[in-house]
Amino acid sequence: MTPAGTAPPVTDVAAAVWSALGTVRDPELDRPITDLRFVSEVSTEDGRVRVRLRLPTYFCAPNFAYLMVDDARRAIVGLPGVTGVEVVLEDHFASGEINHGVAAGEGFEAAFDGLAAGELGGLRRVFLRKGYVAAQERVCAGLADPDVRLGDLPDSPAKEAFLLRRAELGLDCAPDAYVLADPDGEHVPAGRTTRYLRFARTVRISMESNEEYCRGLLRIRYEEQP
Image (cartoon, rainbow, N blue to C red; front, side):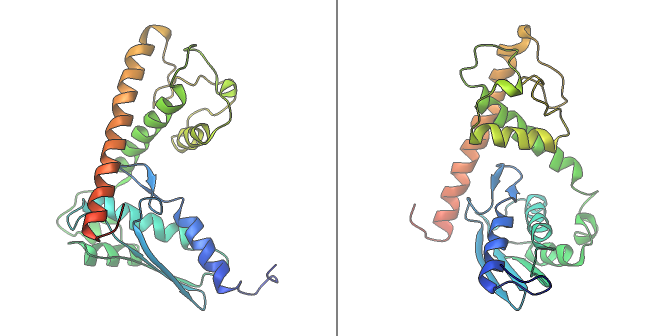
């Protein structure tokens, strides 16, 4: 155990940074950037952390990239033993604007002065809703009773992921809450169940297809073996 008031060993800092980065998700794919291999390097020296990120293409959407770089930085700042953070996105046409904007805490609109209108909160919520619907479809596969409650679901990684996304949207996570609630928290009645789950399946398959596409592009770009 590290004595209070002293920095933990470098290896502990690095492990904590990797763990924190595992909570950062690609907003479109709803997958951790560590699982997607977007984190190419984590280095630490005397509490200062440097993270290098990469993406499947040179021209990935800069707003998505900005969210990931900003989220990565926020996940690390404040960790025990961390005295400074630098998150660097590499090999991207807007790396300069994104890296500078995130480091300065300027926000997306200021980072792309004259080229962006507004911040990214609305975009983030759109993807949170999609992630929620996809996670919901996974826990509802084979569900016979459309009125099943959260407390009736067996414990599983899929349920854990579903509850996390539900909480991120501010929806009811009580055990007696309906599993089938839309992203606004409205219960999906029996008469709409089939159509709603068909829509949810489409969202989930679309996201999983995009994930495989991005993984393939990343492997080709950096000449990695599958």
